[in-house]
Each structure stands twice: as C-alpha cells, then as structure tokens.
Amino acid sequence: MPSIRINEYSYEYHWWGAGETKAPLLLLHEAVGHAKGWGDFPRRLAEATDRRVYAYSRLGWGESESLVAPLAPGYLEQEALEILPKLRTALSLEKVILLGFQEGATISLIHAGAAPTPVEGVIAMAPVLFADDALRIEVCRLYERGLPDSLNSTTSDPDRTFLQWAEVWGGGGMKNWQMDDFARGITCPVLGLRGVNDGFTTPAHLERLASLVRHLESMTLAGCRHAPHIDKQAAVVTAVSAFVRSLD
Image (cartoon, rainbow, N blue to C red):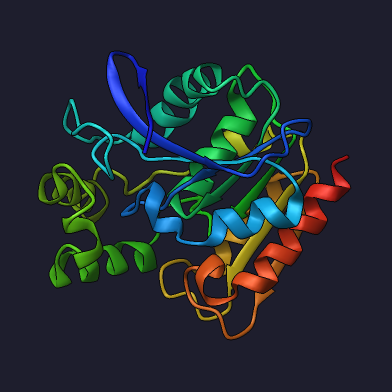
C-alpha cells in the first residue's frame, strides 16, 4: 500500500474507485484493526456509491509505523483532532464522509463534533460513546485470548500495540471516559449501525448517541454480531449508499 507522512511518521493508506467529483468516503478501522482488514467492503462501497473510498492504518497497526509514545487515555481525541485533520489535508479531503467501525466510529464522531474542518456526514458502526463494564469485560476477554492471528503478519509491532491498547481499556485509565461534549457539537447527518448480537457494545451506546446528535438515522441489524460490514455486508452497503445519496 502507498504511504503518507504525518508528523514525520509514515501512515499506510489505500483507495478504491474513481468517483472523483463527489465527496469521498474515508474508512477508520476498529481498535484492533488496519486498512487491509476491511477486506472487499471498500471496493463494493466504491462501486455502489460511485465515490472514491479511502482507508488508512493508525500508528502501530498495519503497515503504518510503530507507536511512537505509549498509548494513553486521550489517544482517541488525539487521533480525531490532531492526526485526522492532517491526514485529510495530506490526501486533499476538503470534503469527506467518514465511516468508522468501533473506535474508528468514535474517532469519526469526535472529529465531526470538534474539528475545525467540517464533514458531510458520518456513518458510525458499533460506536463506543463511553466506557462501561460490558466493554471492559470484552477487552479483558480479548486480552486473555491473545493477539488475533490476522494481525501477526500485518502489523509492524503487534504485541506491543495490542498490549498497550488492552492495558488502557482494561485498567482504570478509561474508567470514566465519555464523549458527550464532542457528540453535542455534531451538526452533520449521522447514520448509526449496530448488530443486534454485538457482544462488544450494548444498545446503550447508540441510545446515548441518539440523545446527543440532532440528525441521526439509527439501524439495528438482525443476525449480526459486532462487525456489520462483515456479517451483513450487502445490507450495510445498501444502507450507506442510501445515506450518502441523501447528502447530495
């Protein structure tokens, strides 16, 4: 994959599609993920929406450089308000629609609510709005199972990154974390998606988002676990395409 430099560090990115006249979509991956982890989803999304689709890997994941400093509480806000604006500038994404999964959805929402450059819309799949017991339990379970095999060959320093992430969420650093104030600042339309069988987040996260955002369309997908773009890809592509058309 090609790379760009932000704050003197290399970030991998990729793009699909040729719809250069419309606002592109930018995909932000989950906590334990990377740009290649989206699989065939970006290509299908580009074809369905006739828009260019971008994805990138955060530091420590995929082929981006290893973490520079230890991961600490506040890393989501830093990604949303420091790194993402610079990445948009580097990729010439003056107009953009953000699509995030899990932590990627959280970063997208924080960016939409507080970054100086506006976005056209946000698609938030399984967003994390606050730290709760259910989320911390799932983090601990994931830590006990160990690093997913899919990351061993795609991440520059997987064990270190995974351990730091698990310690931030499993310890007390994020115990009282929430993003209500950022969500209140969102003025663009938002599409919220969640699988009914999601074991990582509870319905309370989308409910909290609905109480804070002015223009929210919310969907709960039956027969779907944590990753809607994997378990219900066709339904998600259809829903995102309709949402994107509504922004024109």
